[in-house]
Amino acid sequence: MNDDKMNDDTMNDDNKCAVSLTFLGTGTSQGIPVIACNCRVCRSADARDRRLRASVLFDVAQGSCHARLLIDAGPDFRQQMLRAQVTRLDGILLTHEHKDHTGGLDDVRALNYTTGKPVDVYAETRVHDALKREYAYAFAEHKYPGVPEFNLCTIDEDPFTINGIEIIPVRVWHHRLPVLGFRIGRLAYITDASRIDEREKEKLQGLDILVLNVIRRTPHLSHFSLPEALALYDELQPKRLYLSHLSHQIEPHAELAAALPPNVLPAYDGLTVTGY
Image 1 (cartoon, rainbow, N blue to C red):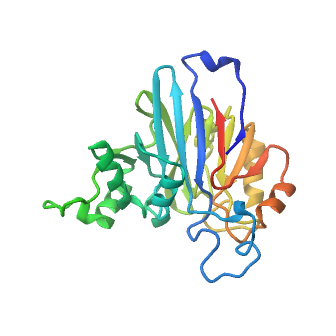
Image 2: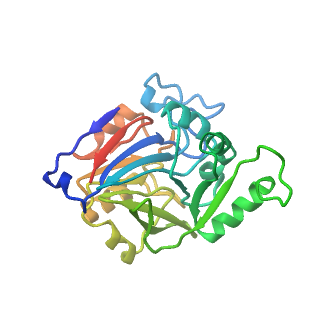
């Protein structure tokens, strides 16, 4: 579903990216509904309150260049790929090593079969090391037939390219854990953050769309609260702010949307937004 179509006369400028971002999952590590929870959010009949674990799909075109990029592959990866009818990926970008962001990587086997090659996984060295432990069978010297095949591509805070498309990593902090957000064109996606240093905020200027994690209204050790996210929105002034990584500790989608300032919106699974 496309909720945000922006027009721009620079669309034909080869220096501009046409970027589409689809929210595959907008929930926290437990998703919504939460197992054994009977709260009103988990019982909501609104489909927008049913949230898989956080992940987004970028489709980017710039001149003759194109890339389809997934950010994070949590435990719902298989379901998300099927729902979005994804048949190929040009890369998986990992924000960090927590299980709700990496727990579905075994299912890249299906993409290995259809493409005949490993899937490129872009992450920091620390995150790759965690994958080698978690998926040791995929990196064994003598592999069991049919294990997932990864091509580990090491990144840091410096910009890099995939298929000619520039990706700008943004360092954020998940309490004390370093995490990467990503900017592509004038869209930026940040999840699992509670702090962004001033130097990194410079990478978030002039955005069409900023996506931020908001877990609840009250303070949290390792995630932005709603007031903190709104303060950052006022500071950075993107055209629109979408809230993701939402928990059942915040009000249902419809109530939250009605209470937010103009141009600040709660994301939901299946939503597609576009910018440049």
